[in-house]
Amino acid sequence: MPSTDITRTRKAIMAGWMRLSPRWLPFADAASADLPLSRILRLGLFQVSVGMAMVLLTGVLNRVLIVEMGVSAWLVALMVALPVLFAPMRALIGFRSDVHRSAFGWRRVPFIWFGSLTQFGGLAIMPFALILLSGDTQGPAWLGHAAAALAFLLVGAGLHTTQTAGLALAADIASEDKRPRVVALLYVMLLLGMLASAFTFGLLLAEFSPLRLIQVVQGAALVTMVLNGIALWKQESRNPGRARGEGIAELDLKDAWQQVSRDGRTARFLLVVALGTAGFTMQDILLEPYGAEILGLSVSETTQLTAFLAGGTLCAFAFAARRLTHGADPFRLAALGVLIGIAAFAAVVFSAPMGAPWLFRVGTFAIGTGGGMFAVATLIIAMSIDAGPADQRLNGLALGAWGAVQATAAGVAIALGGVLRDVVAGLTPHLGAAMQGADVPYSVVYHLEIGVLFVTLIVLGPLVGMRKRAEQRSDAAGSTRFGLAEFPG
Image (cartoon, rainbow, N blue to C red; front, side, top):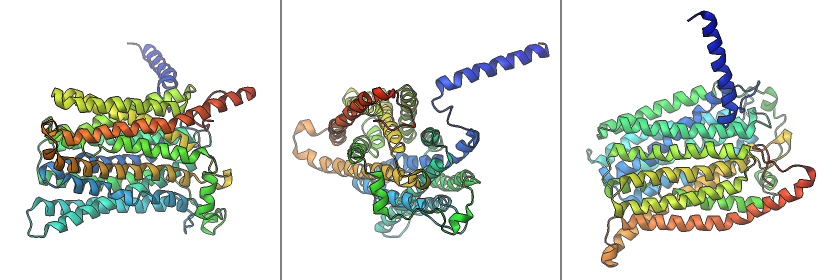
């Protein structure tokens, strides 16, 4: 083929991609001249490490501890929920990073770095806890439980600190009109990290052994430091003025929170976040044991369930972002996600009596889709909350409050799900023949989640009405289109 034809073909291909990306890629316009896409993606590596830690805690270790090592589900649920003890600190961490004064003039970098070290420390302790729990040592059983609890707590504290400060850094370096898109793109990085980690862990643990699991945990600790180190490199510029205390907001936490929550809808919105998150996450440590005990899935197959969850969430994210850019109401998208979640849990419940692993996988994917759509919509709303004047933006506090509510609700729901499953399992022998099935304890939890999601719809309803009335009031000003950078209503 002549060189002129090759050149013409390349130009045609490039022109086609240029026409395709703005239409089909929800965040193709997140980059700018000051913040190129390569820098955004490099910063997003901290989200990949957070996603990897989440998969390891809730997608691998909980199944291994319950099924292979025989640890009680309620105890594992409490371990997985231990990070909830640190979750309310996300708002404080965000605020402290807003007003932090360091010798180098950094605000976010110190918090991201120490969060990474804490996360690494938890993963470094985990192999020793697994050795103690395996029974291959002469140590007391409580020591293994204590070591595992400490490891879960450190990993949770580290990822909460890293994620809160990292998202605030992204909001700092992005321009006003690009900020919601950049942070949303970082959320996609989190989902991709979960998806890739789930498939990788599934492949590595296809031939399961305690030694292989320890190697996987050690590898995750090393990868965490590498990814977060690359993510931080030359992201936040040094500000000598801030090192001298110049330009730092003279606010205490109470005053700063009054700025963020002065809108009367903020409290109801955070309640919606709490209820919806609890409704979707109560099953977090139960899906894998459910697949193993009820449907006979292997370790590799149950680990890959996290990939189904992340894949469904990623699809929901792309759909929601595309709908938002075309003027969709984010509260309505959140409600749609809740409705999908209700149908998804019904599918999971019916997979046991039908003996249908395929229906279980479909339900798992749909849980990810509904939960992802709900999370995306609430994230965009939280990003658009007016958090102070331009020279004293409280991005860390606004995102920290959203993250604190979400993480706290998730932790409480996870613990409640595990405890409820064990309590019902202990009561089933006394409840008659109809309640003797091995799937009954799990089914009770799934039905409770359906009920919580219905309550979420009830609380969410007035917020949708508020936006509709606000749109009618704004018609006179000619503003009826919702964009990612605008607060709904």
